[in-house]
Each structure stands twice: as C-alpha cells, then as structure tokens.
Image (cartoon, rainbow, N blue to C red; front, top):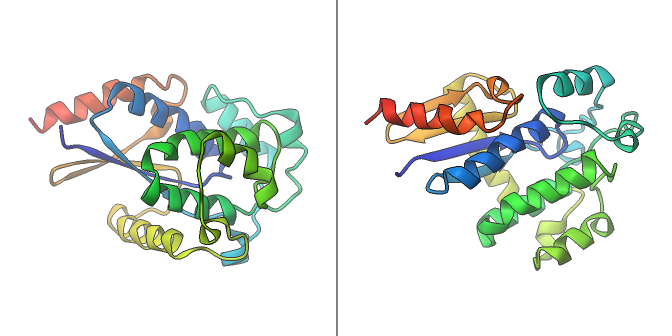
Amino acid sequence: MNAELLFIYDTHCPWSYAATALINEIHQHLPDIKIHYWHSAVFSAAEYDIGENITMDQLDSVEQASSIKFSAIYQQTLNTAKDSTLAANLLAWTNHKAANKTLPLLNALQQAHFQQGIELTNIEQIQNIIDELKLSPPTKALKTDKLSKDAEFELHEIFAIQEIITTKAIPALLLVNGDNLTLLNHNLYLPTPKTIVEAIEFELRKTI
C-alpha cells in the first residue's frame, strides 16, 4: 500500500482535537499509510493578528458530534485569545526531524490544552511534554513571536492543497492514493472514530 493521508489541523481548534481521534485510529490500524501532519496556524495570532476566541456554542457542537468532552478548566479560558504559534513551530520541526514523535506530541499538546487548560504559548508550559518525549528542539522550533521557516513551508503546502479542494475549512483529512485525492468527510466518523478505518479501506478498494 502506498496511500498517504494529509491531516490539516490546528492544535487550538476544537474540531481538530476531535479529528485527532480519527488519526489515532488510522495510525494504529492502517500503519502502512503515511500520515502528513500539517499545522495550518489558523490560531497563530502572532503571525496573522487574528486572536480568535472559541465559543461555548462551538464546544457544544463538537461534543454533540463526537465523543470528545472539554474540561471545565479549559472552558474557563474561552475569553482568552488563542495563539498556536509555538505549537505550530514545534510540530513542524518534529515532522522533519522526529516524525515518529509527531502524533504523540500532537496528542500530548491537545490533552494539555483542552483538558488541562494550558495555553501552550511559552516554553515553560510545554517543557514537560518535550522532556517526556525526549525531544531536543532547537531555538527556531520554540519561537513564540513568529512562524519558523519549517512552519511556513507547511503553510505553502496547505495553501496549494486548499486551492485544489476549494475549501480552507479545518480540520481536513485527504486520502492520497496514486493519482486519486479524496476529501474524507470526517464529521461522519467523529461519533465512532473506528469507522474511519473501514471508510479508508473502502476507498482504497475502489482503486484496485
């Protein structure tokens, strides 16, 4: 199998958090599929000066559509503008230098943010995660004021794909199988993440 999966997300996006459960299933049950993790930096306020807030209505929608629950301590941070610059830089570096740690890192960062209410905006807040995963990121991967070159490169890849699929919505899961590019409707699988595996296997059989 030479199929690949593109996962476009943002660490601080609640819908992306729910979609990561699908990625975990794919990683576990379809290990031959190479997964590309592309952080879209939608919540990178330092880069784009957007400082978006998350609303309770958004959280309610995610919880109703998935098995995800958001902690009370995270909900208390909703009046704080989100900034995913540091997370985008660290994950982009990990993609290039320690790809096998990307998914564990993503899971750990999202757990810290959505369950422990940690904003992930300074090195001290993520140091324990870095240590636990035995990562040794350089200074460029720990920038908090602007996106690194690695993160910007991923953004260019994202922009190119978004032109093809004609949507900038995140999260996005795209299955690449030879010349075929399939945008998977992740909302169908959020209630029962394991069903994404069957859906991908079905898509792959269509091209045999």
